[in-house]
Length: 217
Image 1 (cartoon, helix red, strand yellow):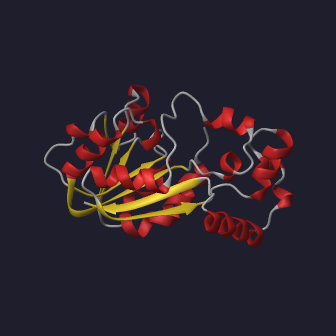
Image 2 (cartoon, rainbow, N blue to C red):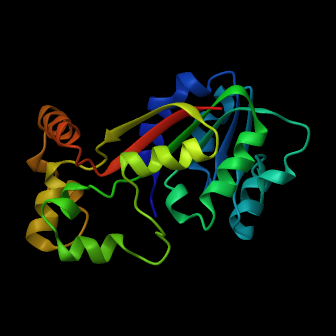
């Protein structure tokens, strides 16, 4: 899966928070976000359970571990989980283990798919349901559920905001063709102004495709 667009967007969104901090990216995958932000951080660590992917990242010089318990004698300023939290078998246990590694007032950033996505909750699109409700997506979160999980693990100062990853052209393509990729196939049906206005409308309706939570230990 090509994650370059999302990696670049996240780098723009969170560089100032990560800069000069000890940062852990949990479930880093191919490590695209590490390529963009590792040099900005005071120290950069990652968790990646897939052995082959993890070994490749280690060979590239990154500090990548299979499990957070393997990070010894280090306390982290900020932990990010980008489209990882919805895959976890025991999210509370994971949040507790992250909290143990965070410094006091350390931050966690969680980005997840939104259960109230416009294509699900308004258009009720069967093709999008089949695409979204796949076996590795164990739960889709609302603002409320995400906050409940974080509070249960002892986090506070929780802010959950909607964010729209995909533009109107993508939604139109789903409605017309029943498959993803409309923002590329029908790229001529979008402008920066239109994309911003559509994203703002979906945020107002609480029907964005993504939620981003920021919380403190």
